[in-house]
Structure formats: C-alpha cells, structure tokens
Amino acid sequence: DSGVTQTPKHLITATGQRVTLRCSPRSGDLSVYWYQQSLDQGLQFLIQYYNGEERAKGNILERFSAQQFPDLHSELNLSSLELGDSALYFCASTAGWGTQNTGELFFGEGSRLTVL
Amino acid sequence: AQSVSQHNHHVILSEAASLELGCNYSYGGTVNLFWYVQYPGQHLQLLLKYFSGDPLVKGIKGFEAEFIKSKFSFNLRKPSVQWSDTAEYFCAVKYPYNFNKFYFGSGTKLNVKP
Image 1 (cartoon, chains in turn red, green):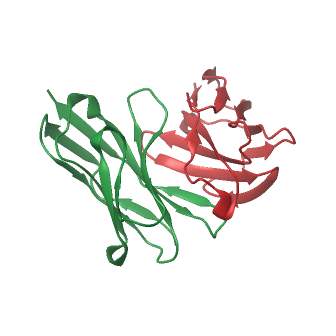
Image 2 (cartoon, chains in turn yellow, red; image 1 turned 180 degrees about the horizontal axis):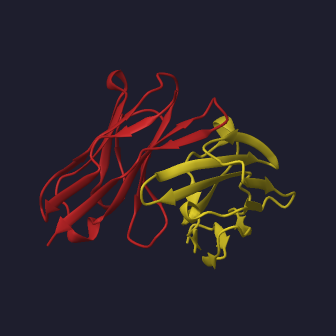
Image 3 (spheres, chains in turn orange, purple; image 1 turned 90 degrees about the vertical axis):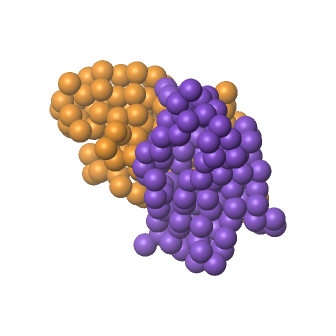
C-alpha cells in the first residue's frame, strides 16, 4: 500500500459524458501528479500540482482539467469524453520540494475509465 | 526537449537468463533517476533510485542499475531473472531544479518463460 488513494477504481461511462477522478496523496505530501496510461500511448504525464498550485502541464487535453484543494486532495475532471479517453489514470504524490524531496513518486492503484 | 528513451519495448527471456534494460535521458543537468516496475494489474512500484554518490545502485528483488553520466544512461540489470519478474519496467527522470518534473520512458514489457 503506497498510501495514495484513488477513487473510483473502475468507471464505465458513455461518450460525451463528464467524470471526476479523485486522488488523496500520502499524508504530508504536497505534490500531486496525474498520469494517463493507455495501451498505445504508454504512461503520459498530464499535470502536476504543488500545495494547491499548478506547477507543470504535460499532454493534457483542453477537455481535461484538474485542481488541488486546500486539504491537498486532487481531482481530475474529464469532459466530453471520447472512446480514446479510455485508459488507466494514475495519481502519484511526493513529499517536499527541491532538496527536501525524498525523490520518488508514490503511485495510487489507478482509476480505470472505460468510455463506451 | 527533456525526454527518456527505453530502447527495448518487449523482452522475452527464459528463467535464469540475465537481464539488461536500456534507459537514456536527454537533459545534461542535474537529474535524479528511477526504475519502476508494474506487475500485471497493479500500480507502479519503485525498484531503485539514484540521487548521488555511488553510480551503481542496488534495488529490491536483486535488481541493480548503473548511472553513466557521460552516456546519459541508467540501465537496469539483473543477473538471473525469475518468472515472477514478468512485468513492465519504466525508467524515470526527475528534474529537481525544474519544479520536480518527472518524465517516464515508454516502458519495457518483460516476459519471463518458466
């Protein structure tokens, strides 16, 4: 158990719909990262937050948005869903910043999204 | 652009064979390096990491990796693989002075035949 919690574990929805994926980082971790893993694209970095502020953006579509709340949990919102959005969405967290950071990312078990 | 390359996408080995998975990164500044493993149906777990010091790092389950700065490489090795090593392996690079950005390679699927 990494200490990172993601909900829901599985989600099936239809094209055009909107879903929200939730992530609770490890206790005390300030940084949250979101990744998308699909069969043909590998592990793609979406977005990173640190203590409520967006720090880096990767290959995140405009239909997707995210935020990190004051209690440090994060939500990834996916809207106008398409078949190609079917994937495993991972959240990861890490502690501290800069030289205080112990280094590695701790991953949650992922949310598997199926768009029909 | 900063990137991570894993040269082998799919590797098939027999038990007891030796393993080496290649990883190269593009940026020449300060980096931290990682190997993660993802067993079927599970999340990514850390195998080993390099921050500084001895460039040969040892991880869990008999894995090790060598950081060669001049080659921008961080190859993963195991002298003798087991069937239970069947998994996908990801190399990752962190840029500690660039907002701790993490980049992952495309992954290598290892299939160990019993």
